[in-house]
Length: 163
Image 1 (cartoon, rainbow, N blue to C red):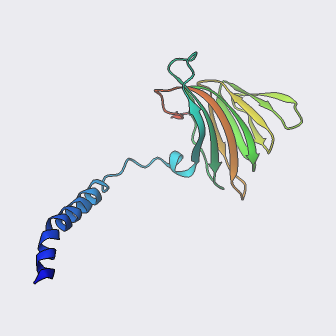
Image 2: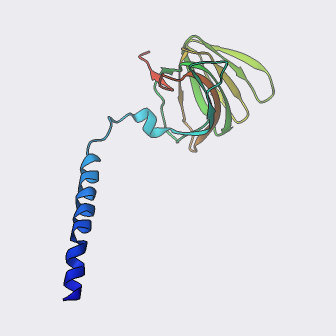
Image 3: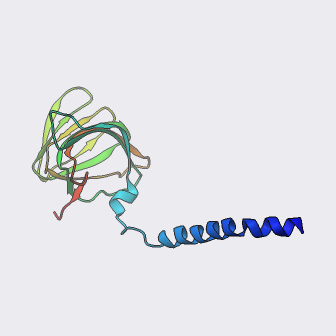
């Protein structure tokens, strides 16, 4: 009889837990639209802040991991981004504008619209705001990029464009 009394007193708690679990599961049925760009690339923010002398901007240090076979669509960024290849080889193309490349041996190049290059370990890249570009990982291994950016804090980090 004592067991029955305890079970009855726990019933409201059990029912609440069950209904909460059902509501949480029901809320998870609707997922955001699939974006293959954000699904294929891992973007890990290592550090970030809002500089007082750059109001409305976010400064970030990010590690991008790009899987083998990934094709990044043409896009721009809402501010300047600098990157360094830490691992792998990235095929990189400028569609509109130009990017500055600093090779591991410290030689500098300007990559202009319509040009493609291979970025290898130790190579760095300077991407001005709104420059249209894309990358491909045509290698058998991942590509890892370290990136620092100063972006408009209210904009997406990558803005997809039509070439």
